[in-house]
Length: 217
Image (cartoon, rainbow, N blue to C red):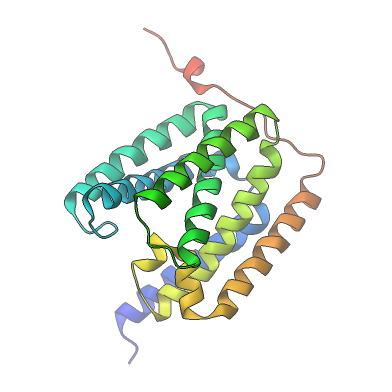
């Protein structure tokens, strides 16, 4: 008889795969809905990694890392929901930070304060460049395609080999599991970018400032 835990994992995995597929190929049109979710999870990871660097703990291994992670996550989620330009800055910074940290650890560097600082500097610089040159549409398409492909690959890894490494360093986790998974991730991300560019050629998200829409006393 199939265990309940297996059925639960299978259902969760199916939901994650559907979500990852939709995100990969339709992320730009869903961006407004995804903003606070994206901000929350990036804030959680960044806060936890900051504690990891400062105190030498493992990723999300202590109560402090969870508390700091949740505080940063809530701040990022609220800011992303209220202000479009901050949402773009967060997603752009997350993309730059994630790619740099992932690549540096993939080539053999340990995640330490140097890798963390380089990731932050590149993330901030990337966010500024995106806003200054007004290329947020293409960055959002690229970021959602990459994230969606990452969700799909991470789901397969977690189903068969649950590990905190998937959350701390998904690129390294995919490579350690199988180089073919890394290749599949790149293929899915590229297909997602191409598909989203074609489907959103004449569609652009309108900017917003929900702070001004809040009722004043």
